[in-house]
Length: 168
Image (cartoon, rainbow, N blue to C red; front, top):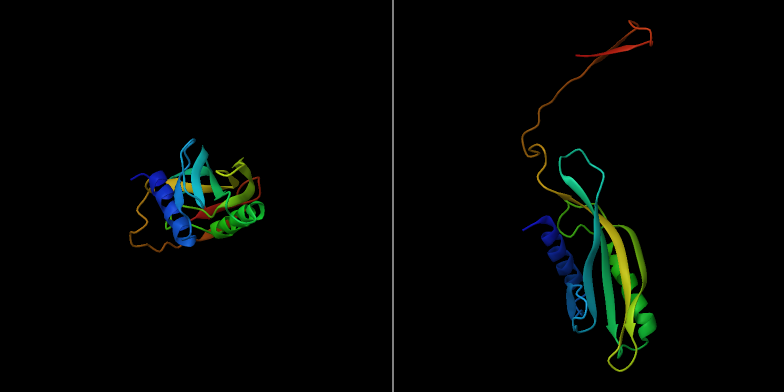
């Protein structure tokens, strides 16, 4: 299974565990019928991130979580905002059981999402964030037994720039 599949599966499982009242936690699909309360997961975009020196490819995921409540929710306008705030709080420092492959979520925001008035209506808030996922195997085996190395530096005035550093 690829890292993105694992990320998506772990994210949806973590949301379901943190919010057991959710009736739907699934990938965002336009036009699909769902049962509320719901969170729909969408990876909106990806870009290459900064290398960390371990040989893995850093991919910055831009994620949108659509928090959806149905029309029958009392005080719907406020409850959907409260729901989004709870999801944002949950996301802080979440590694979704992938601590060696993820950085903490960054740039958490919430904004109004889609809505449909009326008896079969709903309202939503969209929680967005970025999270860096490191894909692939490290460039070297990190599980091997370490070796101690001692370095010493001698500074001499041998060149015109002032100092030469010799590593032994």
